[in-house]
Length: 250
Image (cartoon, rainbow, N blue to C red; front, side, top):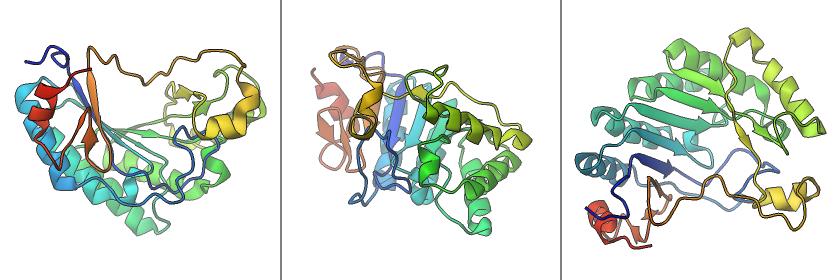
């Protein structure tokens, strides 16, 4: 086994970079021209192959807004469930449709295909452009479907800072009180993409911020697939995932 990936225990899929939000804090910048999604069959086959060779403890799908393509999300999570991956998470802003019947159908499909935790991104940044009501309805449907769900807000500076964005975020979180959904740790915004463009005044100049999502290239614990199939130094559509892992060098 390749020494650089011998500790691999997590798989992530960026399902799409298309998004229903236009968030000031987004580390990926503007999504206006983003289209397309990862190939569902190729992604599922990668899950099967990796799990036959590594002990994978968690899988996550996110975006962009992954539920713009719920069938793709479901196929990935079904594969993860079939291969016995215990933690199967989805990060979503909860806004992919306005029709209540469609929202309910998608929530049921996620449960049926093995999603066992949803991290719902709600905060001052998402709710600048995303209406709250369909997100609340989606959260209620997810609970009814039996999926564990928690709110996952983005905090500016720190969770305890009282800047106007955090004050608004706490207000938005309060709108979910009736649903009794726990609030997770969320994340503190990292200065990248739109965050630098729109929120630069909140970051200190000449300060080196540690990227919380950066992997140690010499000890890969998680692999993340891009919508076009890129992963590590290869691409799913050009080479088998196991060959990519075996041939990887920092």
